[in-house]
Image (cartoon, rainbow over all chains, first blue to last red; front, side, top):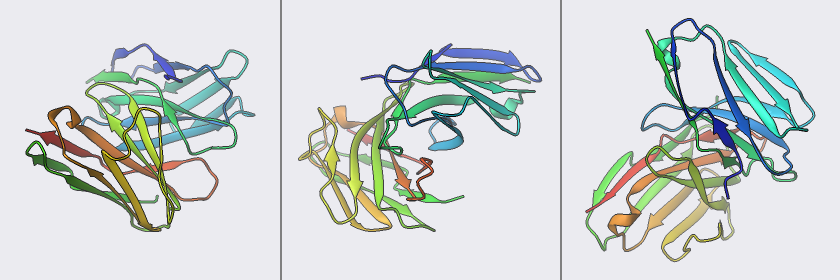
Length: 112
Length: 116
């Protein structure tokens, strides 16, 4: 069953703008992670936020987690054309923090 | 960061043949590896969890006799698609857990299987 649901499904922005992507999930989690995938390639881990954390930063990335609403957001600031990719949120259940369930993904296009 | 190598990156085979895909952790030992399948513009679907030295645990709806998984060492897991059919054409991706209890997984580059 689909755990993570991202929105929007597709996002197109201009270089330099910020990109905000949202993810909702349904069941309890140990952690929530965001991954990036370039077309036809594997996934690259971006950031992990644990269920007892509310916000985390890594470079131009900012992730928030609201466990009461079962939602998370990924903000990419000052976007670059190289940020063009698909972004997935993935959740790990309690007690199995590496068995991930992925959302459908968001396709981000950053226009130069 | 940790590196996971997946081979082959692309494979084309005839219907009815079997194809083996390898997933190797290059600079760490992976007690657990995961195999996913991804359809075009879709999410990753977990197929099975592969534990070194024991039988793989398959997700509901995944045929274990169709998708044979072997995890013979701490650095290698293989997925064999047996008697492949065109509907098995897909992008298969493996990931490895370094066991550091961080929850972070390291992914291979994926293998594009096309069955003619």
